[in-house]
Image (cartoon, rainbow, N blue to C red; front, side):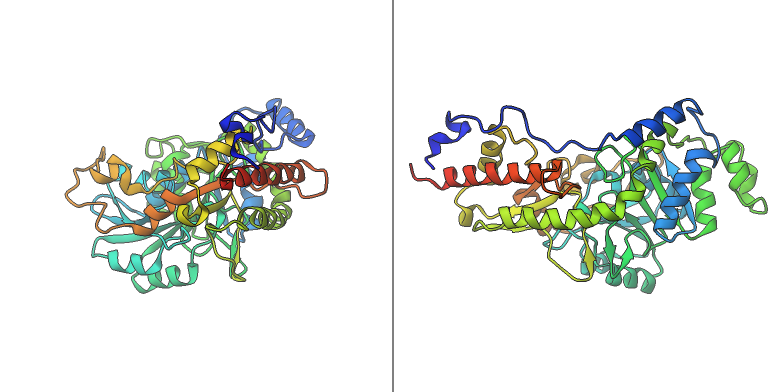
Length: 418
């Protein structure tokens, strides 16, 4: 196909309506439960109603004892780090390749995130963790990027050997598994975001899971004061005297969003299975081209939840840049294919170059090494959604068919010498 047939060069646009995979699904069941909750309560001050139902079901799915909903995934991370007693002069080893929220709450506690490089697939590299451990290191935080689990056997072993806490940020990885075990259950605390683009979406929200009663109590103390804390905290514990006031924050989640998300939980296992099928279809379309490879490797140890399908482009082998590809595909009206920008190596942000905190003045640095793998992925990655429907004629099936149509047109055009 000649290049001039591409919309970016003046050709006819393939899609009249912009194509994106809209999420989350607005189902009759979701509408019904949200309306019901509106007439029940717009605020829930303790562990009751839809809040208790969601926490208990989410904890049961992951075989954890305690679940605590928060106002966001970031709030869940803040609660996790606080519960572990992390504070001034402590260091936490964090992935450089992640969304910045993984590390940001540490600044609020006066602790220092120390950045570690990923492997070539975007997962925190275990050997990099070992190189960064100091006398100040108190914990390791991992992110299961794009739904692909990290090597939790090695990371958990490193934490155990060095007596370090382990926090798992599973914000991309609802339903992902490593060695037939749910992510978020390998460490002391696991957290998930429930933001609107997540597989389980409340619009905004987060949840923390743990098997440790004391950690559960202390996480509540940070942001769930008064009625819930009085009801839930161990009355024999020294910190119970602070139950009425907490420590000054309010991290309660909104019942309407949680009600909406609650209708999605029973479908999680089914959706993850469908995502495996659809990701394979997408890979067969995209990665048949020279110079294009999936970000993550296939492994029998891993079930990837495919928050997105991410692939890398070698410009020299492909014959075009990722910028050329994305601009050409978007010009055809298929906007779902894009370059991830907000998910960037943390060492590029000012706050990690010149760390500041409302609690302490830092003398040490977040950045102590180079990050060649994080930089490489950031400079070569492109992503596209992975639908949760696969039946012929379904919305998900149509999305992948449209992707194939636009992909074939654009690749032929970009490879054309005319």
